[in-house]
Length: 175
Length: 271
Image (cartoon, rainbow over all chains, first blue to last red; front, side, top):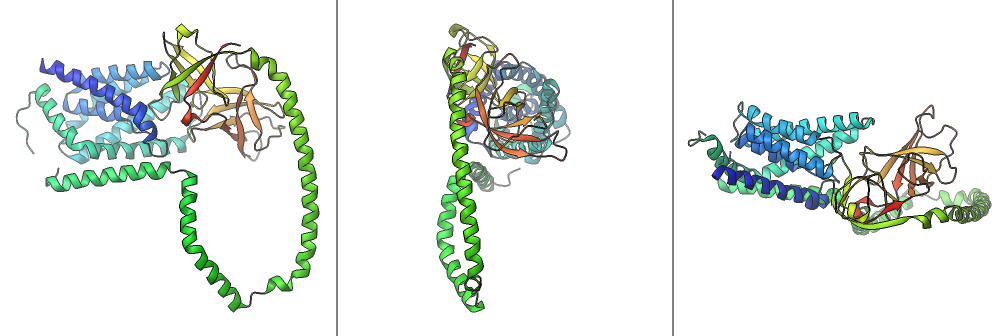
């Protein structure tokens, strides 16, 4: 019951993030570049809740975004699912109680998502690569994601530990 | 990670301030900068002027008076050139207004034949690489895929898909978008595409080698391609980038529509 409630809360959080991304960050941006909170959120689910839930929710959220605003390529679904899956696998090699680890994970996740997303879009639309503008946007997006992660880190860690306890039955943590 | 609670809170506050500063500084408009520039220059410039005056005095900088005869003749020449340029400008303005009247006349029928459905933009794209929008008019309002979407100022894009009450529109600034267009003055065909570089700028490509394009030339839809009707304003050429062989030269077109402030649109339901 508690697990279902937690998943419902995660879905509600997704919609809050969606509205933040579609409204607040359209004007609160760095040089017109928005952060990608979905990447942070799915990585968070993957790390603390587990790869199965990360994969499932990542795909659901991504497909939803593709249907609502994408051009029906369903690439966001695949990529967010992949991030949810990879997050736990990557996390096993590091400590999630380190802020640096989480930041590195966010950088890797953002790069993976955006690079594949952009390459896929270029291939599908047969347009030419705009390498420099893309790198500029990607760099700003990474910085934005890092700053948000630093600000939200205490909340991420606190809620993450509760979710981890619930989904992975971890009762004792070593620091 | 946090050694104590105080330093953790301090770190978060500092990061938040950095983030807000980055957002504010990156979005500051040129007008605001020039306002600040005015304040700063009003502090420094009077002193700088005084110092320059003193420096010139000390150095005996009186070349102005010695070269006065030369300057007089140069002035006469420039006056003459100026009057010639003014004359040509007047002639060009007459041609321009005649041209505009003729164009208006030619496009008049098309313009008034459009039946449009007004709609509000209710959602904008949530990532940095796609520029799609959602409008609050759908199948119930007679909107179908591939219909053209315009704003008062010019072309916005076309409908990709519809639901009962909403429609998804791919804007012309999306990197996936390409619009077959013509330069209004010379009627030469070009292709304009969305670019990642700027949200209100398009890239004009496949410019014919013999095409005479100038900055401030207007660009409009050509009617070729089956989606956009002919004669809808797209924007104005802002910069021409010439290359060695002229084949791959391109230009930047400033969109007529300001997409950052786009709130209402019109969907053309008949073409």
